Image (tube, rainbow, N blue to C red; front, top):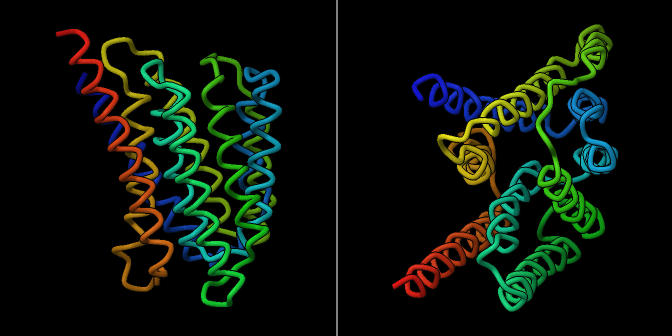
Length: 246
């Protein structure tokens, strides 16, 4: 349990480092940096691995065209998706949460179209869809010992090109995937659920507290609303379950 806790803390630290590396690069991260982790895990993924590769590529291509805070904030959809598609959920919960997400994201896109927020509304839609697809692929991901270790060799061209932030992102994302795979195999505690809540939260929080990163107010408000929606939905579903058991 002590080793697992230490591994969880290291994974959390990797999420912080990854978010900071993306922010310091100002989004200038080659798509290869996000393709490498997907290729590393591809052999065990099957169709889910192929979809993960496509979604990671799509997300990576959008990074230079969006505010960094907005790109990182979208990962808060992970805990929300986990909650609304849990066994305790229902079609009503899914539709309500979907309405909230669409409303908030449309608000962001309208703000972008009005020139009050950087980036493009279309790119925001693509990023949102990419994160949702990545969650689906991760949710259908089966832990295995088979990996494409040759994919890590693709880090060398990034290093030669002096793209240190891209190298850092590739290594951090690969490390996060490896750690999640290891922790998911443990049956003593549901580490995957805790990681799903923690990693998107600490990654964005690292940007909020950073003195040299400006997080636009609309982005912060939407992030808080999405995180609050996930937490409240989980609380209500848990309370409903407990009342039924009584």
